[in-house]
Image (tube, rainbow, N blue to C red; front, side, top):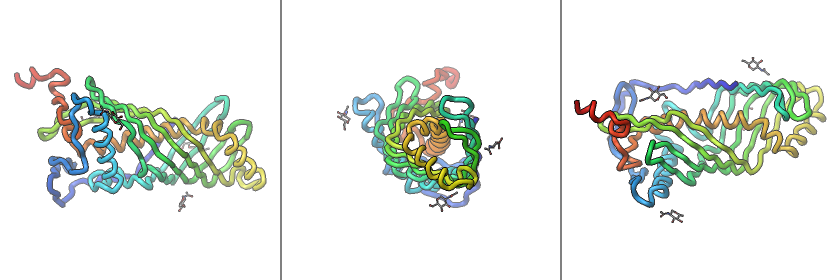
Length: 278
Ligand SMILES: *[C@@H]1O[C@H](CO)[C@@H](O)[C@H](O)[C@H]1NC(C)=O
Ligand SMILES: *[C@@H]1O[C@H](CO)[C@@H](O)[C@H](O)[C@H]1NC(C)=O
Ligand SMILES: *[C@@H]1O[C@H](CO)[C@@H](O)[C@H](O)[C@H]1NC(C)=O
Ligand SMILES: *[C@@H]1O[C@H](CO)[C@@H](O)[C@H](O)[C@H]1NC(C)=O
């Protein structure tokens, strides 16, 4: 249903050295805690507040640009997405096939971490994230129907989402590297609430009628809740894919110990201590 390709290039075999950074098989990770990360203890009552500040601090540094993450992920804002393929068949509101290419996403740099909970049991996460305004533009190719309107066109597309509230759940698996415990982020799911969505698609009917194109765009914006329901799977999957990729890369380079001082060793957590000792 959904496919994305990325041109992000992982630069390996870097030759420069950096204080507190270690390269293993060309991949870097930090061995000294940078000042922008606040350490928290999961067994203390204020943990969630501390963790929220800690994750926001890390995110702010990533937005400013941490070379080890930018090399593999690319810049966060604006973010490039080469291709999205989207298909929705026979729902009440729509039946469309659309391909979006050369997408540019703006606004991720304003991400606010409102709450960052970590499970004491399995170290999964539950985060509340807020983005004041997310803008996407690119080229589209579309065939099908949205609401009652048959669509057949290609051109440029613009989507703007105001007040995006994201409830993100992430599954993690802890692992050991160089004497530190790391998070391996293995799955991300999101639930979204939006304040308002605006869209503009040009050349909707392959340019046959500018007047109908204008009124159709107006109609979509007047009925934006319905139109958003059509777009929702695309936005959900784009965000899930992007966040999984980003979080993986963020936490591959930064030990979990820096965020949760009292995180258990993964071998202890998953009950393989005896085997390790034996
Ligand atoms: C966390 O922060 C909120 C608001 O900033 C505050 O009301 C709450 O008491 C804090 N929780 C703890 C455990 O300190
Ligand atoms: C998206 O917007 C940027 C800046 O407004 C523009 O340079 C770019 O050409 C647009 N992309 C597409 C595919 O229209
Ligand atoms: C979108 O791309 C897919 C696969 O590349 C193709 O099967 C489909 O027909 C395309 N849809 C449109 C509307 O171009
Ligand atoms: C992280 O998990 C993925 C599967 O979700 C696995 O393929 C990968 O090898 C794991 N990485 C580490 C370092 O354990």
